[in-house]
Length: 205
Image (cartoon, rainbow, N blue to C red):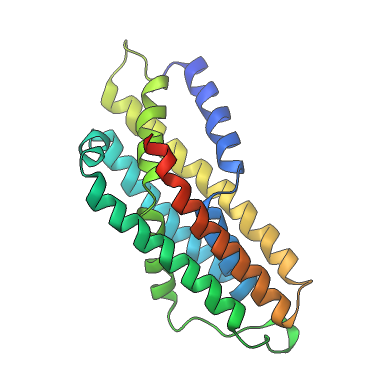
């Protein structure tokens, strides 16, 4: 476990950073507005799992290795970008939702989780960001592996809490949106998430 003052600073820093909307939040809010709160929570399951994988890779020291595979990883990033924008356009063009705020459901809940996982996993910003951030809160006096594990788990927990808050807020907003407007709000957020993922290149600079 990191020293208490370092750990406290880490919690505050990560919480503030995660409150800033990014590609994951865009995907969560977009799916919640379009399909409902339960689908937003499923999206969180996918994005959080991807974050856990990325934090695991960071803890194993693979951030540097992936940094040398920039061309290959760049192609993966752009696939994620295009997919988010595709989902946003599809939402914009969808017919108005049925009465009582319902909308066409995705074909598969499992598919939604898998897609959220893949979209989040293709965002290199998370990998490089945590690769740079986590070591700043490691105490040389303690076990590197144990401290990295504690910080990684803390990141996932904070992400679950913050993302769930975004999802519940989006669910309430959805109740005041109807028909084509709900589709277009959700679609706009998804497109914005795609553009945010495209800008993630800056994280490698």
